Image 1 (tube, rainbow, N blue to C red):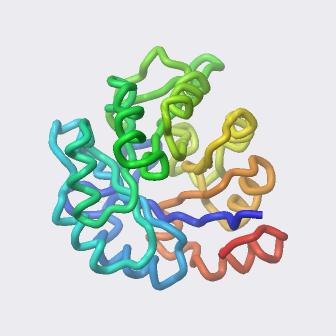
Image 2 (cartoon, rainbow, N blue to C red):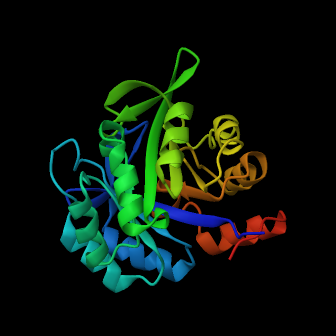
Length: 250
């Protein structure tokens, strides 16, 4: 059985880590490079960095941040935000990133998924999906959750997989920052149709929420932000709890 992964997520704005609720009301959570080092030392399996305003502001991800993080950590890390073409991805790879995460650009130009997978390999390509339930249906949202599309989440994830995505990072906007638990019903529904790893994101508030999403939705990894940033959950303790519940972790 493959070990389940614990992934801290650092949402970066103006060079600082921030965290909000339902994608708004952002507050400062510290220096991203310092946090990256701490999580690497604590035993995190991977890190995800999202430059959350790069797409909205029409700019590229901060390369200096990527290089600084690469010097500090010895675990894989994924970078997302403002990636619109192969050249953007190539620069991030050369700067030290292990994977890239694309969201808005992939929806606008699905062929980008094919091109990235062909050029760098599927294992390099993470498709981030921000989803919100509207009148009983889950819809993809873009630009940091600002824009709702007419694309249903399940349909988009199937297409992304067929085009060569290596992983899906699914964030429930309804659960994000609430600390009420992951959207396990949606995660389970989607995971049953996927043949690539699914990362759960949005809603972690305590250790039991991680146990629940691994057991109920059988996701491959669980991602969280504020509970790690503010020391509410320590990764070594979380992994002990998961092991005691029969969940295989590194």
